[in-house]
Image (cartoon, rainbow, N blue to C red; front, side):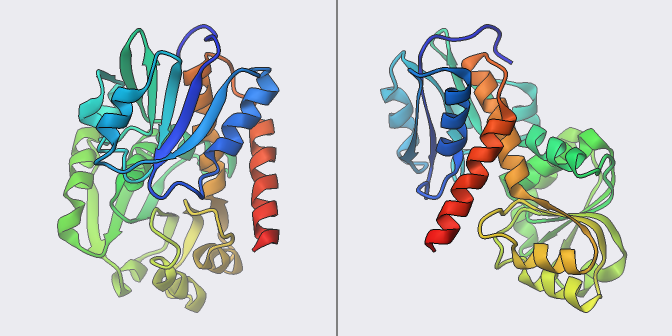
Length: 284
């Protein structure tokens, strides 16, 4: 963490699309609780092509950035320094500006670890991961941290999993690749982590519903709308269900600490996020 509280600053979340992001709600709640009345946090629509010029346009009043899809890998060559975890995972979801330098961090991994531990999942055991993108790579690092023993990654196109296999190699993890379908039901899973959109996980949800696939705990990184079909099926099957909202809150809390130098008020951030989700669901 960055030592010492910083003066007033600006921060934002970048991504495309970005209008749905809860990050402004979470970070602004933290600023209010911490009394950082001069801090500003916004959401900026930004894709890979615009990212270099946007970074160059930010002045010295900027403290940091949160990054979401599709920027977590695209930002890497634009950074001056990255923490070792970023190198291992191949993705940064946080940029902190300090002494004229761009420093990259990954708080997704810590967010996943904390969400799992809060749900009582303290060891990875036999794990099935759905997807091979940046979040799946962070999930591998989280599993490495809690002791994932046997990790299987399900993908729709095996050729797209090369970056994930490179991450596994850097972590020293043994990962088995498989395709979606009946092969997923070959054994019971201690933990299932879905890093793909809710619609993409529907076939796995169907396997949970019909009893051909079993998992002791199911962690779906999607949190809105909730429950996802996968989460609902897991709950009906008696699995421990973990929402991506928990990961979101904890990764945002780590970002607040990195950018402000102050301990994050996690409870206030969680309450603000839940209130916003309730409000938007009622509007819909």
